[in-house]
Image (cartoon, rainbow, N blue to C red; front, top):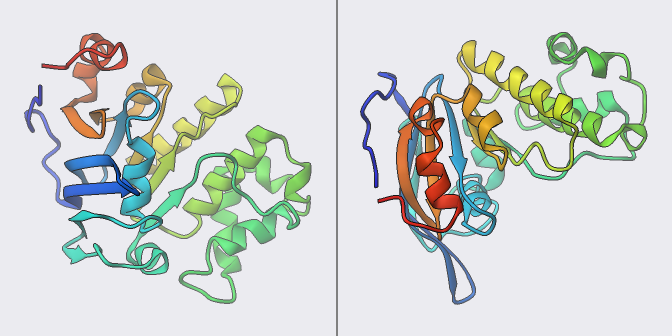
Length: 249
């Protein structure tokens, strides 16, 4: 069941994905996926493990090839864009798994996040990030390898934010982290969204994700099964059907 765009925020479509197909060899993982994210909107993609959620994000960010379909961002066709061109257009993805440069300091990791728009780095962006993430300000000279897993994930998110994206894509930021760290990351994401940044989140912790989201998509075996306001998904029935393997119809 697709509930359509009833109750959708009346904002400009920023990211528009149409007819996306992605395959690994002969195995088609994503099939005819179409969805959008609007300006200033917090959108969550939910589904069981192996449903194709992260694959959708990787295709949008040009990290893997697309078999078919189009990706448009603010009216610009990014279907054949490179990862660098995608970042320069305003889409920044924070990958799953605390992806930071362990042999560099916290501050150098942050400066790397500015390289797409300032090849030598842009130190003027640091103070805003330290205001958002004071735990990083306290460790700015510390090697990333000495941070806890939660601190490394916060650093990875901050590295995405410092590049001034228009759409921040978060892939499973909760993986292996304590609840307090997960809440911290999602609260910062929600605050940034309130300032106008669009958020696209893939997350297994359904309740926490829906607490902050405006709109949600449920993915089932590589397809969008449900598109609905997050508030409607919070009642759990549609989500339970997808996670328990039933159909959302």
